Image (cartoon, rainbow, N blue to C red; front, side, top):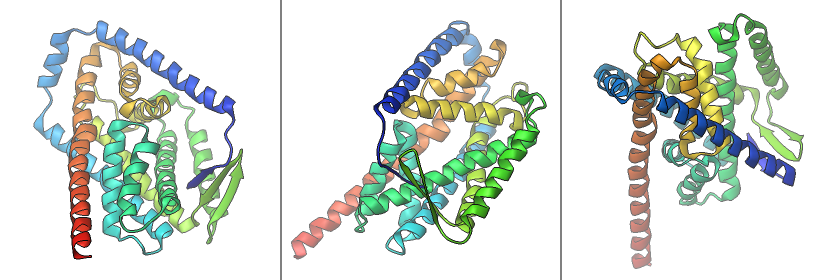
Length: 316
């Protein structure tokens, strides 16, 4: 979804900033409260109890999630760049920009800057890059919608039996979106925003990829929870999604602190040492690990780019 800001009210900016500050303060208070009530030896025991098998499974789920992010990028580049970007470069950009953006936060700025550098090397301008960012972002949003819809229909415990009808309503809304899109792209103007959508076939593919991507991200943490603590995948899903969304709204780097506090709030105090150990391991497998690898890959890309330009300068 290529989103272009035409005007933005000062009230909207102040409201967004105020909400972010409120979420950060609330998360800091919750996290302090939970950690103060936690005994260090309980956390240390939970950390030592993490199995190699669970860590490998978390890393595998992370690979699935990032593979789907690469698929988003390839589809977005194919639709927006019209053959001017190879699918290999698009996949590289999708993995690297998300790996770096997930760690540093302010995803719309950090990930877009990395994309612009990678795509700029083959002559794409800011407008082309923005269209790729918008379409890839739409895929992530549709992934959230698909996963939430499925979770509500399958009735997680948190909805206490009332989730099926809202889930069916969301499913009908997604089906209506595909019907509205049809065979040609559409543009919707709403509150000063111009929202450009792909056709129904591309959007449907984004829904499928997005559902797999979100399930991979959730599984990367779920598999690290001990069997005695872990709820079912369906019951864990809404807690994870709420934590991710709160982290995004807060603008904290990687949702740090906000993500943890929301997840810890979903478990009783006696289980929180195990949950905190799983979260910290997840931060290593899903956030820190890809960030290190992505940074090294981006550094190598920069080195090769400058080397090529120096060679061209000498040859010229």
